[in-house]
Image 1 (tube, rainbow, N blue to C red):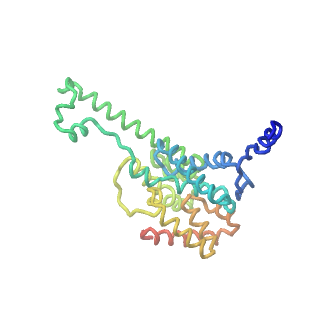
Image 2 (cartoon, one colour):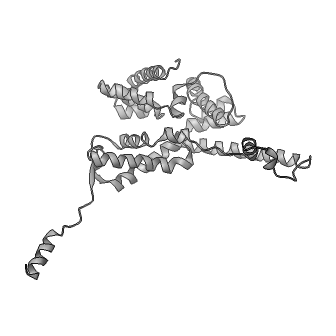
Image 3 (cartoon, one colour):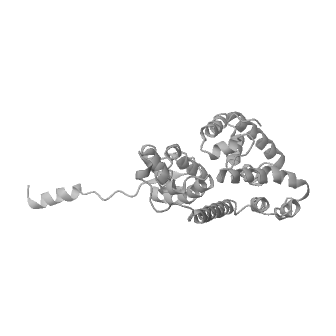
Length: 296
């Protein structure tokens, strides 16, 4: 075979690089994996902070979720074809390994604890701090730590509810001496709406603050608290049951309650009147209480 024939044969075997793989989505036609990643990450990041996932673990959790998405798309390229952006966000979140990270949540090991667990405590203690001289300093440090904990909790709550006037007014009412009437007026929940605001906004927020500060409180655990604690399986099974029955309204209502959507938002999403949405919300609460074994 002459040289030209060899060259021609080599050239015929050279193929151009394949174009970037694109996947059909239900919200923006075909997208590359990088575009899907960039589109979903901000919402996933916001929701993980909303549900108070451990902040230092969030990047790893997001990476885990997208790794599983990549694996599934490799096997089923049209996986996202029938999902809107919210559905895709939930798909990635629910596969981010939250149970693994909660199980192995890191805790700080104090020196005294380390000494107690590791043998003779005196071998690990630092000399030179005995006596009464440092008592005042210790009390000062304790108060500084408490102040920092309170400031951090207030900042987290303010960021979490920054778009809800009713929640911000509730935080103001709980943490100051403002009167109920003035706080309800700030929340735009005066008159007959005050009772609803107290039970639906103020009470859950007060319980959330108690949990953040590790304060014990009386009362039963609600399904909302169980969802926030990471028990999402009953919720997902309930949504899947309604979807299997073809009851998309109830499935959307259950998801909306879990995401703390307002009645107005559900009315716009479902295209239903307020009375019908109130009925769906009430039924969804009953189903969630039953699924989580809570007393309504």
